[in-house]
Picture 1: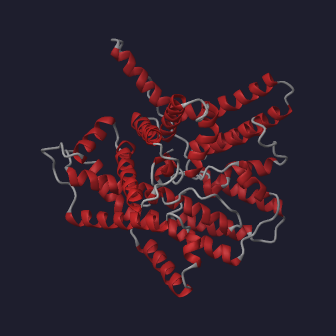
Picture 2: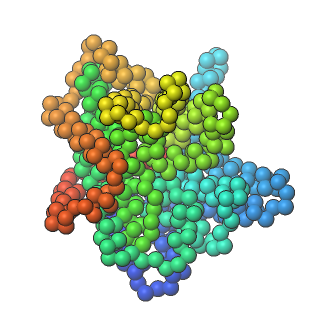
Picture 3: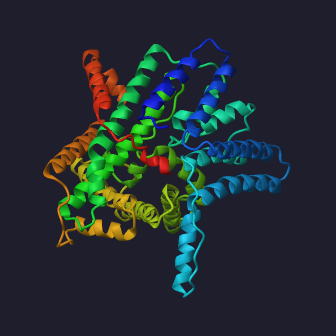
Length: 474
């Protein structure tokens, strides 16, 4: 069940309608929990059992960690949680990848090994809810929090359907306290929630699927070599597509939750207006970047043990962050490239004696912002390409090395893509230090209402493919 479907529209009306019936608060929470399992089971019902197992495992291990009398016992229960969660994630997501690479390794030393056929479906959103439940266990282990007293609240925290399959990755302290007392949206919150859902659907249906996906698919699916213009336009189209697709999902999720009186954290903050790569990761997929920072980078030592160790910690964090996105060397390359960006940025600041923060000069800010945007797009090549060889072919086109290139983009698609990307990047720069709520508050209602109606009209009339959100595969 995807947000951009008529099925979900019916599901949303029923769930919200029942939620606002005069029922006890516990009954409403139980209703949301059941609705969340129905929402998740719509993809593949058997995997609801996996979600339930993860919930029970971390509920038990967190309580055992808290009541353990020795450090050894605490470590045992933490190891059990890590083994269960990361073991499940590794089996479903990386099993085939491991087999393929083992087969290649055997072939390199002359052993013809034929692995069994790997025909196991990847549970949708497993990376998201695994990290979410792990944050609970780790927080209890690190004594940042105590185990919850209500299993219903914990189960709802794990499965809350607006953000279950593609984030934001919510920490217990951000969501669980909201389950303590009855919640209901005010009329203004409910209206704003609907506005956010419309904006998110517009990003997904109209921009990502309706315009940019066509260009990106044409370039990255081309059988022949592509030239300079096609390679760049295809990559820029994908950069816009993945932002509008993923940020669109997050915006819809935040709006859905708000319609029921719940608050979810913002997951994007206009990343294509980033000035530097550390700034980019404070704006892109914020819930993942902060999770990796708090539970991986800082425990590795962060920046406490000198430059060399800091650079190593950055590379490890970003390489694993890349692998989190998918079982492919292209994702590892994407993460490694961002790791190198962060390392070089930090090194250059040290060499030049430049303090942390943005340049004061307007021209310097614009220059660093442009370099950041272009290099982020270079990294997106590895994220989108099906193989390292395919990525190399696109990169060759981007630097003009494909001499016998074939044009794959019609002129109209090139124009639409250029206009769309220009508008997107301009909007990011105009909004980089503002929020959508601030913009809405400063906009007269006689302007805001027609704008909302126009977005809704475009969403309804756009003949989209109904594709699932890109991050569902992660």
